[in-house]
Image (cartoon, rainbow, N blue to C red; front, side):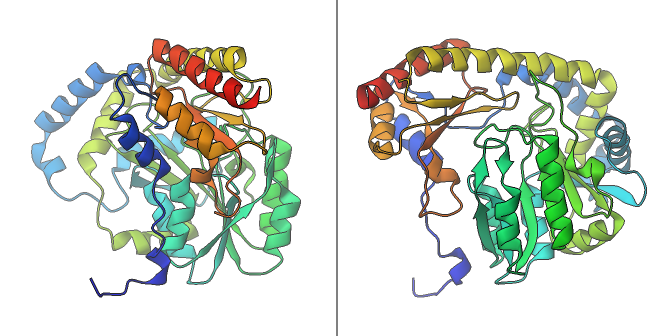
Length: 395
């Protein structure tokens, strides 16, 4: 084909997660710690089946026609009240926008805030869709160095001083891929940098409801005095990933600007939002969160115990307080590609840090392991296999 596509979509980097799936499909009994799927047992299947049936039977034409651009009003109100009550989000001059999954905001925000050549800041290792969405509009993602508390404020300020930045993308709770939680002091420091250099903060919180140990940390949005934080959440990790119901909460001004961009995409499925709304009316959502957090906590402990028992002592294992991922850092002197290949050949898929590196020239020396999607016995067996591989290489 002779057509020349724009440079912003010329990056044909292969998905490492997809590569693991393809290679693993040819290996009997393969265990994948690569996906970020919710635990199957955490999804309230029977309630959602009942709600889907009732929603359709009550008013089929209501859900078979186009819905409002902002989303279903009743669920928006429910979300707003909960954000104010449980997350400390500001009440005045703010509103909810419903989304087809929280991931939709990853595209909406850079399309709203960035022009070609602008910069957007994120952790040096983060969710790939976050920085790929920046590239898709011609913006330049800039990975900011991290420590054990997440993004380093002084490093962010160094880049912000250049005057090209538009926003900061953060996953403060149980970060993907590292599992780190940013302390309140660090959140406030990042906010102050954003205030000094007039940056928007995109607070992505898809995992924040899944806390199984430690104390909750206030959202950045909770101390947003000047309306510069866009808080984004989802029901994908707590009720159903497949129904694709997410939301963002922001100042009226930001909502108006984002709505202009979202209008070109059309409305989101109202049926899915009504299913979630009805499910919320049938259950005690806070108790449901405690139940599923216990499930995730059990799976995390199984993986953490297995890794601690079987891995080389030269591995640095970061155990999260919630979410879905454990981050295993290996010695920089070792060949991470060889370790990855050996693990796959032995029947276990783990994702190299390269998949999450904003700067391809700094791919890191770590693996992300997901504990939510596998059965308990597979977690145990997979950790034993992976641990033995690390011992063969490092000890």
